[in-house]
Image (cartoon, rainbow, N blue to C red; front, side, top):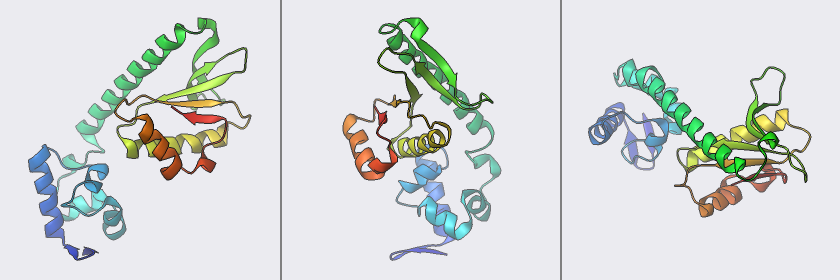
Length: 198
């Protein structure tokens, strides 16, 4: 059993929280949704006590089809994310094409031999070349996760100090949100001086 402050999170109480969430929203919660739902403990607590969401779902008798990381829901989500990524990259390419000669814009630039590690745009400019990584986080928490992942990948793969612009395309996340994330959630020491988030 889990305990948070005065709340005892029995399996019955957690199952009731899952059922309430389903009745309100028509699907069972993801880890992010669990964290923002007052009738459930945090996903971190669930991980610590029950070994993760899949094991918890087994304990409260939710069938595998309710696992949103697998099956139809997961594949539909992957298709939607792929379409959205293509759309925002095309939007950025159109914008860049109006400001640079097309020969200066290199799409899907690979910076490793195996072509696995690609960045969306490699820009050739008379004042110096630079890279643009376009991404669309679903929310502020997802933005932090995406950016931490990108910083880790590029730190390992890019050592020459080429400037990188992380171009965040979710218009629901504003400049003030970005500033707070950079100053509070992401220490400036983790964002190299030649990299920026826009």
